[in-house]
Image (cartoon, rainbow, N blue to C red; front, side):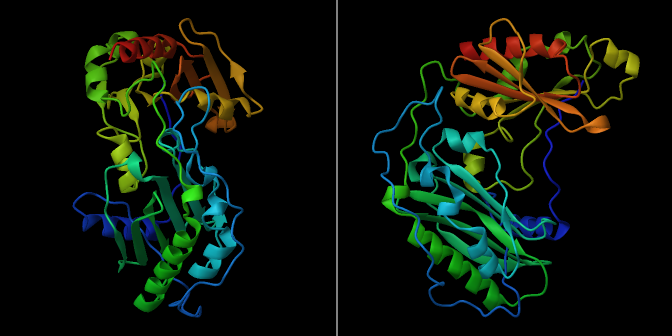
Length: 363
């Protein structure tokens, strides 16, 4: 049994650029890379005027997390920040919006906005959160060249913090990279109005603390026994994005992607795996995120699985053939445990999540 968190492979040029930016940042800020095409005029003044999104009334009172997704900045609508067409014009590469669930950001009243080319060679990855959701007040907007130009953004406007990066491959000039950065910042400042802000949500009664102390959880829960005393089985950090933004890193705390992982580096035989041993078991812990079950309910393969002590456990099939996997969301009061298995039946994972939930209730 293993848990697999699949994320698309990012083009090597994007990774190199991101790592280069991160290397020069003491706090480990997220990379940012991008540069417009050489034959695209550098934008040094105001970007072309585009239609403004319809103004909305910003919530003035924070709501509790739990069964309902909290109010989010820009109402969770990335098109209200930038459209794919606007970014394509700025960057000189055609990009499309790639929706991704980032429950830890939603829990903080934020949203992840990702745009990319088909090959991931061009990537715009911004986390947007309420200003008070994080302690950082850093203001950074700079571009740096490794194999490609990479631009990093840490900026706040009207109570909304944008944290992340963008990049564009190929040989581009510093002037064009900086022009793209100026255009992105200018457009963000136009769109980030008080009406698009959101308050930091209040944790629901009974919500597990975020982020989770995975090391302490690992010491308190004897999962090695649950998984038939798998040789060398123990806790270790794992999971998460290749280069998270500083805002998301702060929300994660000492966990990596809010993921608590246990496993062994020893190779197990088919017989050992059939006996209930596991190479890896990992759960993502989201206190107060019971609303996330709605995303699973929308999947055509969503099926409820009975597990004592949980309000619901929902299973969704992903992939096909040899790549078939099963993702699960276990709802416990206002909280959620998310995990994936390479088998349809929960097996020992049912006992594992029961012990984990009980321990988190006591924490």
